[in-house]
View 1 (cartoon, rainbow over the protein chains, first blue to last red):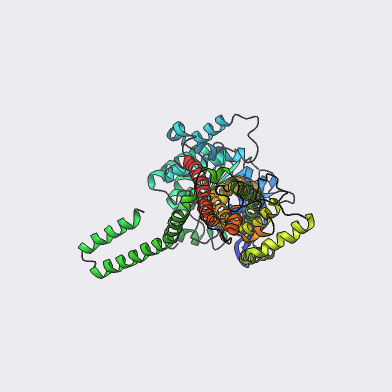
View 2: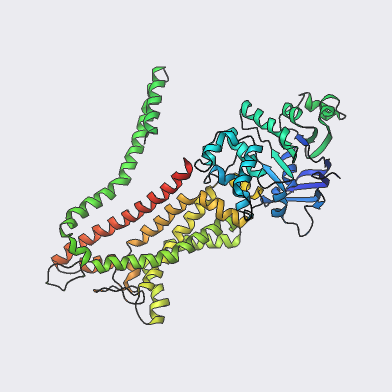
Length: 254
Length: 298
């Protein structure tokens, strides 16, 4: 399989007794953008959270199956969630910069708090991450004076992207990253996705089908915990093979 | 408080558009009731302060802060040794009580969703209700009896035990108020749980935790009962934590129950100094933490 790709084999997930994902198998292409769409509660967030074991933050959540990032089975015995999350970054629905840290410290947090800053030029890493997140020019003058929380919503979200990129993950998971943002801020984030996929594999959850069509080469459609269809995006939106996909993308439900 | 005033103006503006006098009236009544409650909260403190100032300020002079007590019948003297002793006892109490209080608060908030946490929470609440004299007796039997002498250290331990439940529960509350999304952000970066708590969650709750620490501190700073048979009191200078030590509340108590007018006046002055020292300490600590927080926020 190509490097940076994700292979999911028969992934099941539960919250308590309730099954949230059923037998998901999927091959996500490395260095491309894959969108996950579907109505609310269909399991798309649960799915991406299973890709970096973030679902384990919820004590009721369980998952079974195999997920390979590159050649590593992230659920293998002896693999810890901490190792997985260092390779698979995440951007959340609501921007969540660390409120007590400056912009600089927010971006550097992943390196500093993991004890990786030694022997590196932290300033360069921070600058590069902010450039990749298209935020550098807006914040370069008060990196260390301003708090991350003082930025606008859209800037905060790009800060969170920079923070995730600074640890150089192979995969970046984005859980509806633009749903709390205005159209201008959304456009900026979509623009930078085109640059990002040169260097990371992007999996983006969205309830906005236009967004999926704009940013993603591949799209997966989830419904009630099942992966109904997974294909090239234009195929999905123009010639869906499954009736349920067609109903959804044509706006007949959801 | 600017917001409530604006709220009233807003309703006034709505009233002009016909939303109704009844609503404006209700709003004003509710507003009035809240202002009154606020005044009722502040009033006792102001009354106590003015009364203490009236009775005690007259006996305050330089000697009060620099001299030790004089024998009965001899005028002058001060409570310098009691002020220093209180400082030492409170320092010991804080050094023991604050780390334990904060540590157990962190445990309760982050790892306490289980039986052990429930037991700890219940214990803290019960401990909070134990009369302070009982804590004094506890420290007495644990430390004074075994070491065969009274000491500032025993007093500090008694006060520390008293401080712990307040700090522990308030720390827990403050940590639980830190949004879940902040923890997820850190965990999502591959930062281990303990590091997330220490470097992300605790700083985010810092000002609340400091408030809790100050609450615990001011609660014990004026306590007399736990010190009666632990620190015991002392009419002379003492800098050793292993010896009987004077403390402001003890000195006030001794002077207040004495039959001498001069001592009564000294007790009033001591009470005034004690309350000013507590208010001052709390104010300084809050100012310092507020400023360091302000630096990052702007």
